[in-house]
Length: 198
Image (tube, rainbow, N blue to C red; front, side):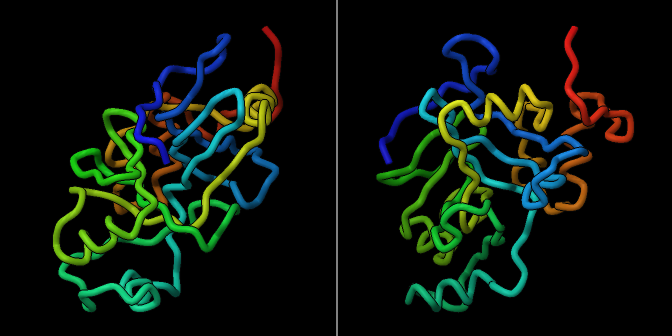
């Protein structure tokens, strides 16, 4: 990964994108893999988009298990990080979404609130008691081809909201979807699932 900042500007203008924002699935989301999802959009350009789901913890695999699989020490670790199902693409590939207070070669700054690292260096640092202040380890990611996310937004599948640490890294995963909508002062029960034109 190239070490460059991705502008966190809003989408819906020529050449403007949503990297650094959170995508919040509308209540009528047709794809069951993304129902009630909150996704940190890590990259968004004319070539497509990539994001990490931040509210779907993985059951059945712990950080200790992962360290053993990767032959990383120490086990047990001095510090742990929670594992998430980051999306349906490349489920065996790991990404750490984290606060930008730590970085290594290959870390990608996304915005002032968050960075992404896909190397084992960050897992070693966390296991050893260091690493970023907060983070989640995602297996897999969500991906969109050129124009696909823009089309889904126009079809009323997603809303965007600025991130905060509670939505990105908080422990109350069941509430993240509602809390993200609440930031927009939206009651999910009042949302229409059909797109309209003004």
